Length: 147
Image (tube, rainbow, N blue to C red; front, side, top):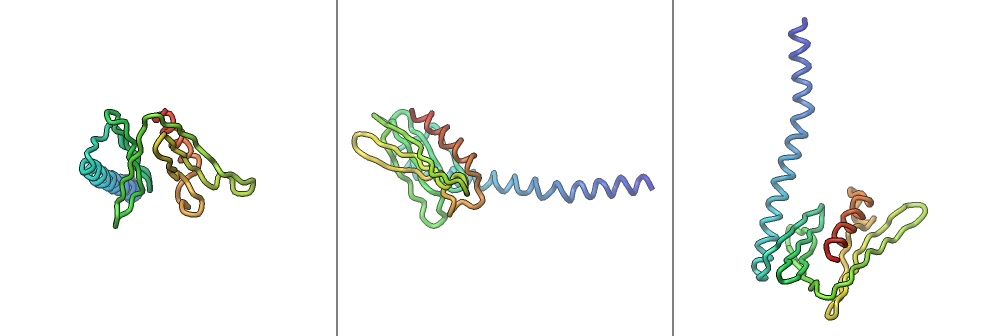
């Protein structure tokens, strides 16, 4: 009786933990594939990335030597990499909030002498599976890194 209970317990433990490990392995593999694609695209633009972060739908990278930020959305069909000069950069985070819904949108506004751009970290209409506070922390982290 004890041996069968232990075996049944181990079997159930494996049945619940195996999908977790599978999910973690698949996520790491997908992240590695995206990192290769992004680094290859950046190399085609003659940028070597010192730092790269891949989020659920967004990627950001920095080339500190050339003072360039590289960013874009993860799109299977058409990976577009945008670049932005960091010289003379002002960086501001804007949050749209409402009393009923909380944070509705998080946008980082980038501005230098030559260009102006915005990076959308969170949009409630698009990001139903992403937490707004986690995206706000990510935006604040990148604001500090760029400042």
